[in-house]
Amino acid sequence: MQTKRLTIYDIAKATNVSYASVSRAISGRPGISQKTREYILETCEKLGYTANITARTLAGGQSKLIGFVVSGMDNPFMGELSSQAEIYAREKGYNLILCNSMAQNKHETELVSILINRKVDGVIIVPVNSNSYTALEKYLSQIPIVFIGDNLPEKTYTHVSVDNYLGAFIGTEYLVSLGHSSILYFGNRPQSFTHRNRSAGYIAACKKHKLQPAIIDNMSSTSSIENGYMLAKKNFSADMPYTAVFAATDTMAIGAIQAADEKKIRIPCDLSVLGFDNISISRLSRINLTTIEQPLDKLVISAIDLILQLVHDSEPERENIIIQPNLIIRGTCAIPQK
Image (cartoon, rainbow, N blue to C red; front, side, top):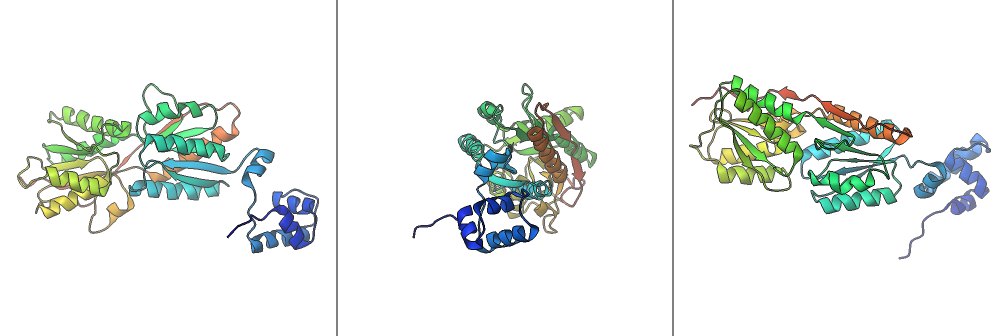
């Protein structure tokens, strides 16, 4: 069946008013009575008329749309981040276009190009990996871009990030304070600069307390519960030498807990488990995960405020915001029993 998008001319015909009056009502311009404006807008609502955003952008200069590109929706952290970002953007009078790069640099680049063609006012990106910054550099002069995640040391892009190095350092120190001297860092993704910062914080804390670092890498492009489960199932055993596991993300930690349970490894009696992110499911009573929190509200507010600052400032200065992480103590860590 052939479809036809409603136009202003269709609304003018339905309301029996002029094209110019409909245009004024929709754009909010003066020149018509309030009664006529309300009648036209009610008719638009009734018929399901959608304004041509691209045309209005060309005329008015702004679309009131922000692109939001995440690296994967299989991680609950990304879903929670996107949801809060949408809520705060709407409070600021903007709508979000959510895109999933599926942890692929090629998709990420294509999505940013599509968003620019759709005339969004700016783009917020949770990068796939360190290659993202170089691949997306060509777009920085075309549209305001803010990254959520650790920036490369040699780059000066506008970005917002939790101090991942500090978070891992704090987490390792907490495990040491409980009496753990054999701590495994689990699920590190070497291709991710964020993960490299976290593992570096873990290593620094181990060196401070004269402990031997031990790292199991996750070579997948994502940190999912399934990946955590499979990696732990392959590497965990009842007689492994570690009394504590510091997982690179909460999802990896939850997968590890599942695998440990199947191998009759009791949490936290036999093995303490610490996560990173504080996603919502980590608070469930059956999980009750001790973790390092990335404060989502601060990340979202900082990123949205920065992108709007870049949108409205004719000569914006690039800015980096580093947010402090928090240790959230629950029930998966305890004094070592062996």
